[in-house]
Length: 105
Image (cartoon, rainbow, N blue to C red):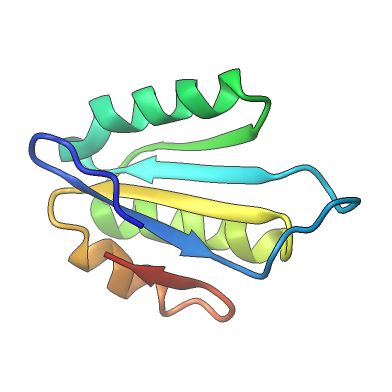
């Protein structure tokens, strides 16, 4: 699943699945400098729909991917992550280094 912006691509990082009756869906979202505008728009859209959004802020691609991956690991089954970066390749590689996190550009 991709989120496309003028200069950035989004990456979904996923851990487990969420079913009815489980904890509310939590989405961690982070970006590098290239994806700040798209990240803010996506976070606002999700919050309007009642989804819990944990904003990792604007960091280097490595730190953003690591922060989001840790959030996904912390809440298995109820967490998702969105990473927005210049190409999406680097953040996907970093996020995939975390056990139980699967990211694809």
